[in-house]
Length: 151
Image 1 (cartoon, rainbow, N blue to C red):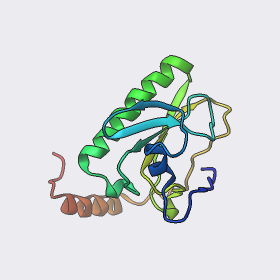
Image 2 (image 1 turned 180 degrees about the horizontal axis):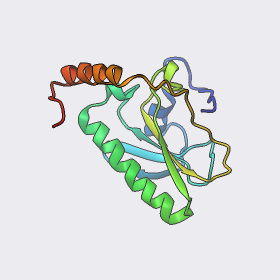
Image 3 (image 1 turned 30 degrees about the vertical axis):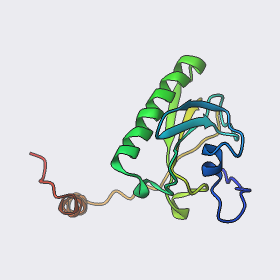
């Protein structure tokens, strides 16, 4: 992801300032929990950010209801992008933490219309662990989630 330089004063969140109306935004949708606005660094026409209104830095800081609200808004905006700009593809991007490439530490989802020649690349090295390793990972996650193996 391209680096964004947040010019907010120290200790202030740029998205909280946007939600409060302290800085301008090209808002496309808003409800009680979310706000959707055009990314100032438009990759492709219709590139929208969906943010939770309450300050929550990452996905881990959201309530389950906020997480659901964010996805409902992202889906609604995605339909509007498709109907307005007719892109051949669409990607959702959401980053958490420095190592996850998060640059604004207020939860948000990029709803990004895609074109074959838009210069965006998303790749990672496949590691292809053996099935036994995958089963170990799955068992560990099921233990944490308190779920049983699939039938």
